[in-house]
Length: 312
Image 1: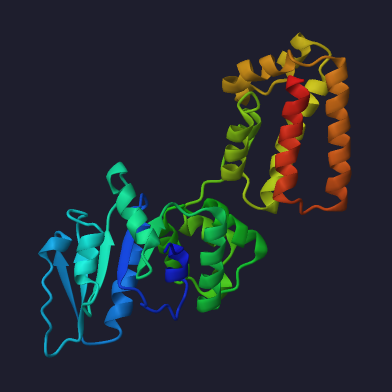
Image 2: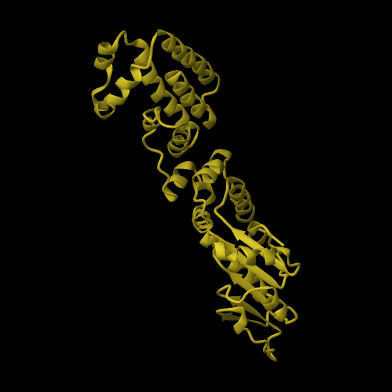
């Protein structure tokens, strides 16, 4: 049967209750973690030896006086089939197979999927829900208090590869509880949130690219406010300029690299679009006055609405 790798990692009372474990997928750091977890769990029982064989056909059942059972790590899928599994099924040993995904192992994986004495563990990059589960468990065990904004920063910004994700969380343990602030996390995890104005300069890109860049540059509520005022400056420049010559004169000198983009942007605006942009700024200002601590989603909606007006 198939089992979620997180149920092995996060379940503190995880029991070895199967004969065969087939660990596969394409995320090598998670594969290594699952392998280590299974082996260490069996070793905790005591009196267990670890042996390695290249293929299941090389295994020989040799009961030791001092050891009740062995963990047999099988390196390849050579000669692996129902017949070879049945040959070793009645032994006291536990078999762990580790094999990255390939077209050659589809049939083999299906054997373990249907076998009642087996666990099939597929390991892929972490999705958002998986990262949330791991982070919540980390907080519970370490008894570290993390503010809501910082929690989502970690979920969004940390690697989808389990090994790197776990390493980053381990680094957090080196901080004193009172030191866990956004600034310290940013330094510790080398999160780059500079260049918020670059999000505005990506207006002509696809929405998914804008969203990705926004998530890289705008990380907390303070950033949202700063980002909003960047955008408002550029929008106001468009609204207040009577014509293209006037607009060119008002573009700050330090934006010489972005001048071409800004001119192309202005050319897409007529009076109707300027009025729409003004209406957007006005409604956004009302929200800002009511709540200075704008949510991250506000800033994203704001920039996407600017794009919608621009390209309409």
